[in-house]
Amino acid sequence: MPEEQAFCVLVKIMYDYGLRDLYKNNFEDLHCKFYQLEKLLQEQLPDLHNHFCDLNLEAHMYASQWFLTLFTAKFPLCMVFHIIDLLLCEGLNIIFHVALALLKTSKEDLLQADFEGALKFFRVQLPKRYRAEENARRLMEQACNIKVPTKKLKKYEKEYQAMRESQLQQEDPMDRYKRENRRLQEASMRLEQENDDLAHELVTSKIALRNDLDQAEDKADVLNKELLLTKQRLVETEEEKRKQEEETAQLKEGFRKQLEKAEYEIKKTTAIIAEYKQICSQLSTRLEKQQAASKEELEVVKGKMMACKHCSDIFSKEGAVKLAAVSQENQGVETDDEKDLLKKQLREMELELAQTKLQLVEAKCKIQELEHQRGALMNEIQAAKNSWFSKTLSSIKTATSTQPLQPPPASQSPKEST
Image (cartoon, rainbow, N blue to C red; front, side, top):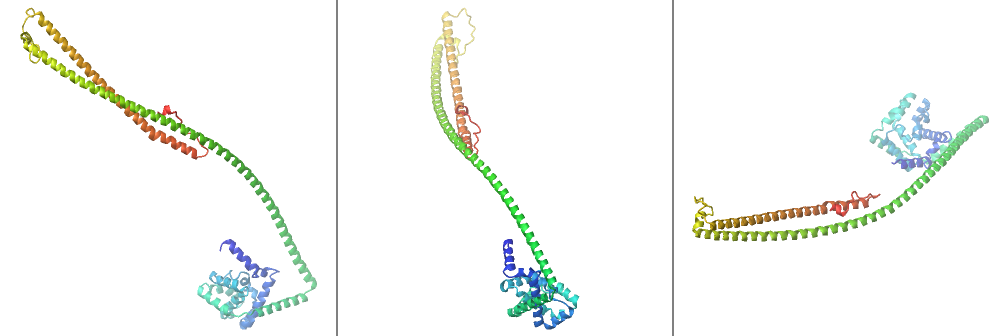
């Protein structure tokens, strides 16, 4: 059983079943039980009773623990469990049944034993016999079959009381009064001690209650202070939450504007790139046309030069100048002028071609630079969307959910974040 239930059962046995009476009045009721047991032994086992009388072996010498401890001092628990079950059902009289059953089953051994041997048998050998559950079960069956009439027990109780009264009457009144006075003094001292103990317990209880009350009041004050602080923190937290929400809304608005601006810049950059591509294509077309026109003019010039006798001698079909061994003195002024004119036209065409190629290269470089800027801008926008914005929002949510709220880990302006 749990401790509380076991204690309740003990109180029930002591008060309602009368076991407490065995300890009162100098064990007077216990001696009455011994007298009843000896009378039952004399009635049911007369030869064993006579043997005990010859040995001067009285009931209190072997049966005191049977009554005071309900056989729990020496006997195994498997037997004690059955005895306590019967006691709870039948009352204290079941002890007489068990005692007579023990004496009846051990009759032969006890008749052969002397005083010391009988005491040793009761103390050692008798409990060992019932370690086996089967022996304990047979003993309990035999104990239940033994008849112990309640009328006889009451009769023996009256005889014992009459015997005790006669003994007290035969006793010297002075001795009886002294013994009664001593008993009353002991009872008075015991009551005074109990009174002192109760008074000390009462004072101790009052002091403990006062201390507990003071501690409870201190604790209540602390709790009230904590409650006020908590309410104040709640108000501050709500205010901080409102500020965080406003700041979050501002951040969202700033990010939205920056995003719109970035998208506008992307569109603008895309339009510029398209225009540059269109200009480059136009330049390429123009260059091709100029190259074709230059080739045609060159072919025309070559044809005219080849048609002229003097020019055909100077230039080959491929356009290279022949190193003829003609002296400058024999060349005419017209041939020198035409040659200088052709060379000048050729240099102008080459210069224009070089400028066109340079413009084409610059346009391509500009296009690559714009594409690089566009890619970098797209990467920055994507990174801002995926990392900084999500981290800022998560930190704001975490800050608003915890108490006390902490400010955001990084508060950058939209321009700096962009």
